[in-house]
Length: 125
Image (cartoon, one colour):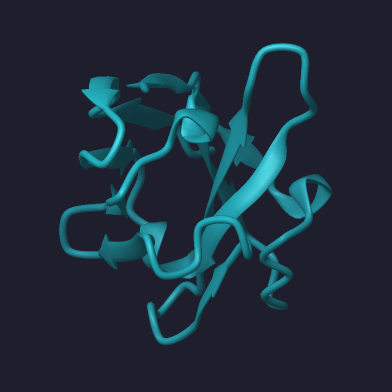
């Protein structure tokens, strides 16, 4: 069992930055691929970024490529999402998720086994 707790959301102006964190419980964090998803009001949850268990592979949605960076610190059981050059369309609840499978599927929400409660990021224009 893994528990995930996101933090770092807030209100920021367009062009600004936020850094989201996701702290995981348990001693096997390094075995999990990690992903970030987001859901805006009235929209479906969408993939944002993912990182493999060892941190060697990252994947991004086209909408955030070049602006967001996912990273992890396995010693701290934490995954991060650095969000720069924020736009109003980035406004959403951001969720982190953990995938315990051997294969790194990244973009598909259905493969993730554990989810956090989400943190709100609001970008004002």
